[in-house]
Image (tube, rainbow, N blue to C red; front, side):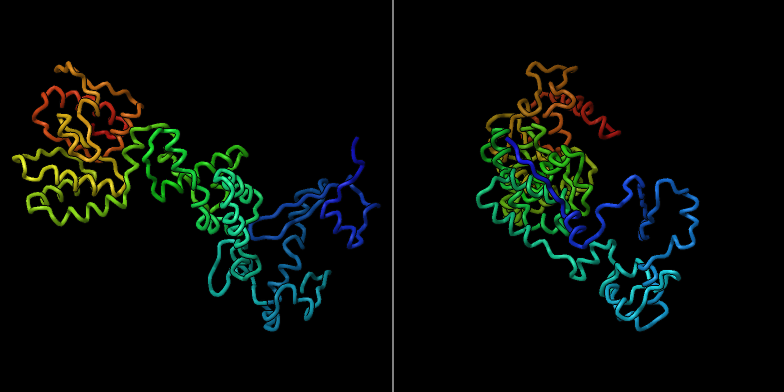
Length: 399
């Protein structure tokens, strides 16, 4: 069983309503058109010679461009819009002559502001409705729909050009589109206490929408000024080590740093400023801090770690012994963190391969704090130095 019916599209329905000819047309004659930026379309038959079309005397003249010329000649015409022009002026088709605009660029100027596109100019004039209905629709759907479905909805609105200002809609609804970010990362990477900041959640949603668009051979770059995702921060690369170091609560660390920093002594503050300055300028360096037990070395390590981690930087805190590593925030033993072999000798290297998660973690780190360093054999430092030079040689030519 089937329905024997016919679908009439909106253009055909409008054509019939206005009483235009349906039959007695010549469908075999194809009419082509092209246009240049900020110029009107040129329509011609497929068998017309290009030179004849281009050299046609009236090729650059139309009722629309005649509007510009009338505005230049007649002051009264500048008070009329294009649609109001026929109420005061008559279009002479043989001569091709007919508010204020005298060029395409001036059409894009509204209230003294020059816009880059006609769409933006129309939006400023109130000719295009705002996107509040789409914001309300996504907000309402967020109460019962999954974030993945909302991302598909947003992508559908993008590809259908439904939104006038998609970047504004994005800024209003991104939190709904990235609502499942922490859950997905915690599940896939088995990190139950993972925390993500605002920029990381935004990047997650943008990456997911970029994947959806790529399936349709499109990209967010096709819809400027929509933001683009940062591929370098794609945590789905599966690097759990890097994820653990990036999942600290930055706001809590900032409060901790603001509490610890005023308590630094003059000597501690001197070390703090030197280390932080070289980290920020990426000068690099190696420093040896010596002090008796109870002089506040661990206090200083905590302050520096909180300062950098609150900015989203990677800090590796290691110690020569397991007990000492427990005193450092996120501390590990040096053997555990850097895969230093137990039977180390003068030719040893750490068991870290290029491109491995641990290699990526070390490359992205801004600072390594090694507590109780003198307790380790010099071959351990030499093994780590050889390994780091090998890892950094593709990033730092000085290595």
